[in-house]
Image (tube, rainbow, N blue to C red):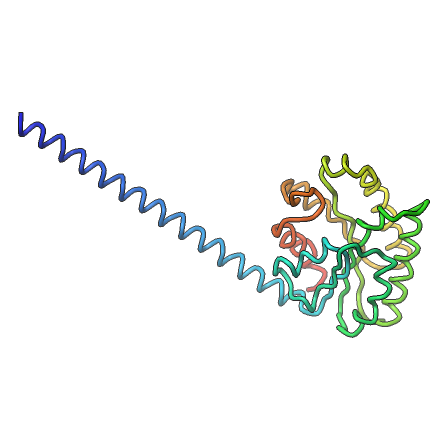
Length: 221
């Protein structure tokens, strides 16, 4: 009886030891995977900073996320909360001082909320002025207009004017053709990655910005 009890205890001890070893190995594996993921993200961020080193992104608080999340350096980002095409006209001298080869513009999220009878037309008129002023100050720079990012259904329900995003983006596309500048639709990013919005359903998580630069990378090669 004593030998049987001893065997049972020994078997239990061995099982606990194996389980502990298994848990330790799993924890070590998870830690290694996390380190690899972080290293890959750091490498990717460094690569994008180099790739877009001669570019400047001009826009609102959504654009500001590029530098806020450390995806690009501050010198390559001119994003301000509440910025509109009209307000951006005041920033062209600063933009010119940075002397970028490529200017990416993403405005409109706040323009759609502007308190005027026709926010779209008011915004696009100022957008055209903005492009003209940039061309005047930076005649060799290439310009890309980016579409306004979509919002979640909840955000649209809270602010019905966001329903006009698709119509506004069509206006941007036509403006780009008229002004002979590039136009990039960012909506495919969200079709492939539906969980990129922050809690407010308007702004973006850090993951969005890596996807954005991946979409734009061919334009700076």
